[in-house]
Length: 139
Picture 1 (cartoon, rainbow, N blue to C red):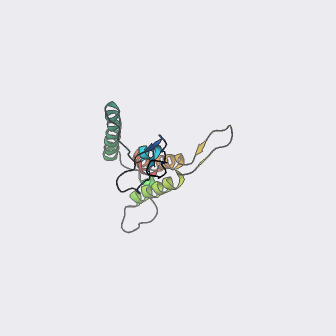
Picture 2: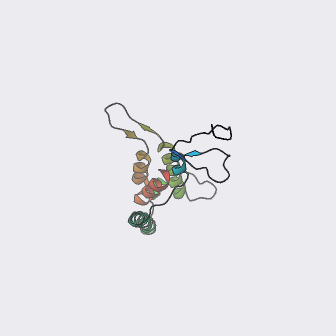
Picture 3: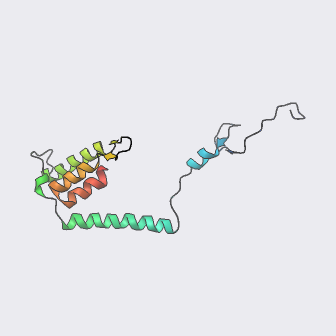
């Protein structure tokens, strides 16, 4: 108790001060304070990350411009006036999105990742351009 007769509450050292607009007397744990402020990489790591991302984007654009998608990936119908070849790539992207969220592993065995199959199938049907679009968007 303090001299004024009110009980004093000790705050654990692992608690950070509350931010603006927080409830009076409430303090945010340090772990939550760190999660609340995400930051982008800086310095040499930022240069490495941006170089990697921009190189991948340049390769995607160059491959799309230089190597056409093969007609064997085309669906046998046209939907809304879309090109059947493009629609075939969209179908495989949808299959990739549906399967990339699922994996399976048993004890002591290899992990099976189902998201690779649509990429391989789109490569077999549509070539490298279709495969890179399915890999980029569908996974």
